Image (cartoon, rainbow, N blue to C red; front, side):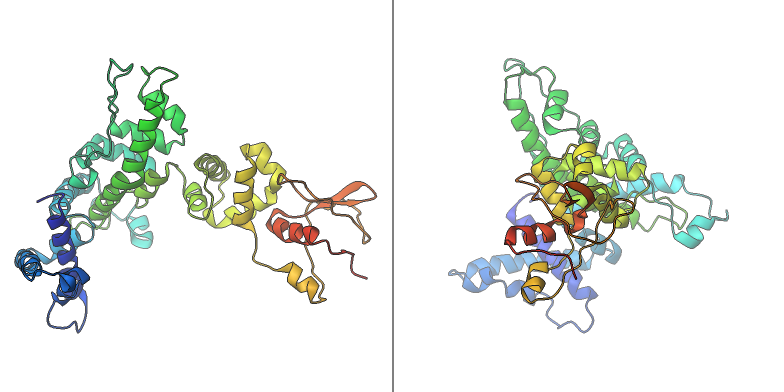
Amino acid sequence: MLGTVAADFAAFVWLVLQTHAETLHAPGDRLEPVRSLLAMEQADDESVPARWMALAEKTAMVYDTTDPGSARRWASTGTSIGSARFLDGIAQRLAEQLVAQAVPADTPDEISVFLGPPEWPLEQTLNFLSEQDVFESLLVMPETSGCWKFTGTRNGGFAADVPISGAIRDWISGTSIPELARTWMPDSLPADPQPLEQAVHSISKAFEHAISWTAGALVNLVNTHPLLTPTTPRLFAHTAWHIRHGVDTEQAITLLTSGITSRRLAHQIGRAAADARISSGELRTWLADQQIDGWITAYKANTYEVEDLLDYMSKPANPLNELLRGRPVAIPLARVGPGTGDGPVTLPHPGKKPATIRVNRDGNQIAAIPAARHHDVLTMIDSGLDLAPPP
């Protein structure tokens, strides 16, 4: 039944049963949400909902005879129950390996006492999962069926045998997809589009969906396993996010989940921020201080990437609305020249391509508009209003 509609239905019923068990003062009929499904109520043939409810009742019987802890764990994966049991078996094995590496329980451990159990970094977690052949094991699940498949043949110019553990490391390293295609299928002809097409397809199906999903569920099962003690190391909790997005720093994940669409740009900025010990919380201010020309120089940001960064750090404001109401608008300046006093200035339009808006006086630059206020000032310049310094 694995990988079928019936398996998906049983997984839904299991989740309903688990939710009912964890809900205080829940109504007595725990299968009522299943009976109330739209498909059940609109079925023309009464035998159809009857058959599905019979499956629901059998699922409930299995649920009732399952250890409550296991039932709860299986419901947390989002997979079919068969796959959840499979993942839990792997989690049991991995948990035993982690327990063997734990600090002895009678050894004082200030880190565990005050900060909780130690968590391995991403690199160590990936090494451990690879050594245990975890990623290869995930590929046998119905949820991942066909997600990692290269169909090249020697007659077509290349042989396609791409071990997934190594490919995950390549992907997380930030390597571009065209370069990955050449690395994974080195025997392919340079003009052959098939390797790139297959790399894009496999990355999308495996890393961005099936493997990140199942690996994330597995890491959660391991880290919450009852075998683990307060001194047992935990796997890196956000491993799945890095597999999904193909970057290796927390800072890059922050960028990609905050509107930055370029994986290349996020990876470069993330690595630079990590090297400079800039946390994700400090990322916006740190980037804004570099200004647009800094992004172009340091990260080779193109027009679209600069626009993404400007959107990421722009502060919500409506200066044009304030001006139309006759209210003054104050814009802080960056890179103010030494000894610069008050007086009239001009703001030349930066042009079609994003560029730092310069503040000029008598033809000389005396300051710059901060990147975080670029959109605000550009809106005022484009409005055509006469701008003048306050009296």
